Image (cartoon, rainbow, N blue to C red; front, side, top):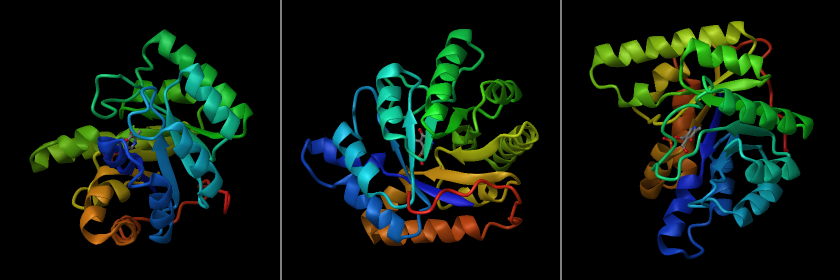
Length: 256
Ligand code: PXP
């Protein structure tokens, strides 16, 4: 299980004052010292948190690997291709949303065209590709057909479900999607809305090999420090019951 820490939220605090602190570049160092297996950043079209300077410096300083979240749009794909990060995760992007609200709408032919073209460009640059999708069979089938290496299952519905029955139903959806994606040859990632309280059942799902977590860890970091907050999350995800080593799981290049 790999734990990637999303540090956009550090940049969000900085942008609240449009100053130079806290610096997501320093946050990435601390997250790595706390045991993060990778650093996730989303360069949004409106640059509301992470900006081009952050991307440039993080590309030079991150020692684990960068998971670069981006829309399937040429201006940001150009930047990703030039940097060739370890991994790129294509996500839908709407200006009016507070955070990414749902998975890619791969039922739409125009979205598939844009995503497919982006996957091919990123792949040619040597970057591993992942698609952020809702836990639905059709989206998984499209993802495999588009040639992505991995998918990231949107765990927001699970995180927002209230009551044991609703949570269990969402977990079953995620488990079914993970099994279907695995059968299609896709690596399975998950993320969005995961917290110290709700992460263990997701971390225990068969085939899930990577989690992307931001808000909950950065929130805790305000109180206990980032290194400790990451270490505590890492302890939970690697200790999740039922986790067994999975042969054939992709191993990131060390010190990328
Ligand atoms: N994965 C994706 C694709 C995201 O867009 C986000 C939010 O930035 C996350 C994971 C992390 O979500 P959260 O901040 O709720 O942990």
